[in-house]
Length: 517
Image (cartoon, rainbow, N blue to C red; front, side, top):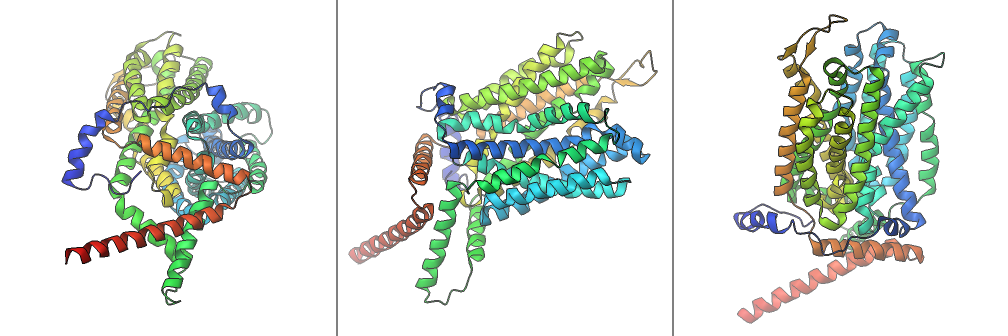
């Protein structure tokens, strides 16, 4: 995306009418997904899969607390609501991790930030399983929240930066649902370990510390992304040129050069940054609003037992994975914003069936609603990557995502609080209080779908010319890497080319001024 959009009256006058015309699908034709998948080479597959599995295991570690809330509360002699602070603290501190890791990742590279976060996962998951009281447990989960927020930016950049443009849509949808994959894996291993081992809930945390060891070995074996190698070399070449031009008087290091670039990026894109946070608040709200309180609705209001509630929830997650991958694939060919707007319309239309049915057919409604919840998320990873300024891509991506998640973290609390204003008859078997959560979830979801539709419509999107340029650049970098060409030389060449262009522009201005005299 170009720097500095939507900052003047003239820009606004051009921008607003373009929101309709830019919904026109790209010129590229719909391609067979199998053809797209086969086009990836080993380098691209490895980077995508390590990013996906790292993000999925990140989610696995997060859901270990959600799934064992009752068991932990019993072990610590506390109420589940006390232990749930472990979830809240994790969510709150994800933004801190995104800020720290995103900045370091854009400065030093995606590879070692991923390795560092995965190593800390091992330590913190082991420590969680050894905690014997609530205080230390909450402290460990707070540190885990920083690591969880810190992994997303480097993982997403690693997974998507070096992919051909046509593959980014389907890969974006699959990568985003690494979160759902992590939930499903956590649910499976919860059932396999917690009820069957002598250490109960602790065994799930200890098991969670194992797979990151394999992920670390895998990531160390792989190189940095092509994209970052070029950006880093370009930054260092510009810094070296300034040293030469200043005859050694400029003592600013490479870090100062990066901070200068980051400052320029934020100053030139602060409106874009705010827009991305606002957008991600809506996207995270539709996930939390449709999922967090839904099992309670199924049990207390619909009357489903534990088995049917589990089946309905799992079917919904499968729908989210399928929807995200499918709509992510189509977004490469019909446009990201148009794809997400279509998902909003269908997702909103299914809300009544999602809340009003009281039979087993609700399983089908849940599946299709989650298809579009996952579907609207499908293009988001590649959309955020494309919107983010190139030199601070990981920081913009992860920080805006996590700030949006922070803003939406109270969604289920809002639904539960308002739902208590609509009491139902007490449970005839247990005498427990019941509330009309279905009405509140339905109204909340309807409002959020409209919210997302509006902000997606007015928001920016990469133009066709920018898509073509990005696609050509990615193919060029990968072809050169495969031929053994140094990507550092490409970055240095780009810096030199920019310097020459600036000098030519300056000479042209001087000639014009002389002619005007």
